[in-house]
Image (tube, rainbow, N blue to C red; front, side, top):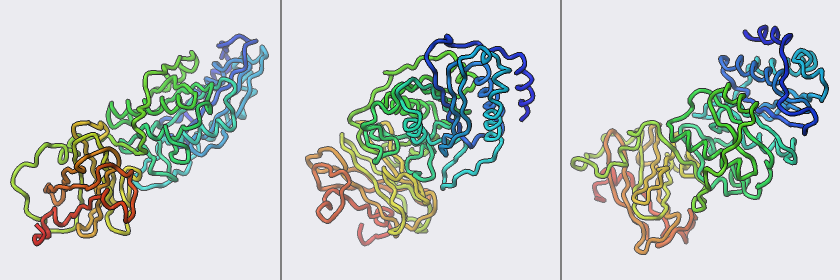
Length: 430
């Protein structure tokens, strides 16, 4: 690395300034590091971690550095309460093997997982890593955790929980058990007690400022629900390590769990407002469009409704394809999107098939999930296909929701979407 010689040339004169008195309590530090750093990031990460070891860690402290995606050890060291270890030179000599292990880890080209439409640049598996620390480091004494990696969770084993493409989890995940959601914090109120977390990411991974706010809020609540504090959440390594050195206080209490938001779903913020314009506009302009001349192509199916009820759209490219809905937001053919604003005036959600699908093979249904509707809910179906927007109505017989249950006794809670009829391809049924 370009800065390696510079770092070690500074070791001769490095002077340690302890941040706690020598007879103070032992301090434990952990660094969770992504194995998928860009080459341009590696030098800076290496320099700052080595600087932390040589100049900033107090005596009577320990440091463990882990791969925060694969949950493996990179290096561990303990700084004794001896005068000699106030010297950066002494530390460089004593911890040369650990520093070399860090250098090797950063220099290696780690094989990245593969999953359709998921980007593993700078990825970490934060929930699994924090579970790993809880099991192996414990929570009886204060622990300072430094996270370096992407704040957008992605996992090749459970892609449905991934935060790529503007997705973020609903509060329902935090109220759930770990068996129900990878973000579940139920019955884990003290699993990370005494942990203070400093989170550093790179660049601008956000779809928008709202996206950043949603993710920052979610991780803050995630840690709080388990007894930890998120002290820093920033995109600058200098700010991150300065906050660790100074012990920046956490600002807890700024966010609150929405107790009514119990549904386990991944909501989405889109980068382009125009993506949802076809379904958000109040009325479709012009006369009813002519039926499409081709029955195969990309398609968007959306539903709109009014009232304080929860309806859900389910759709698959064919009977044998994966079904897209709020618990399964991505498939090979497309994705599911729900209005994150949860407006009490009008809600909407849609499924977009980015790959061409056959109109006659697509399966689409609507479920009355939750709420009360004395006359049964109804609303509008909109379909964008072949560059045109088509509209139809739907109605459900049930007067209350059934939370997605299926079976012969549940048919009144569902409405089937007849796509060929909406597109005008079945004139005999108009």
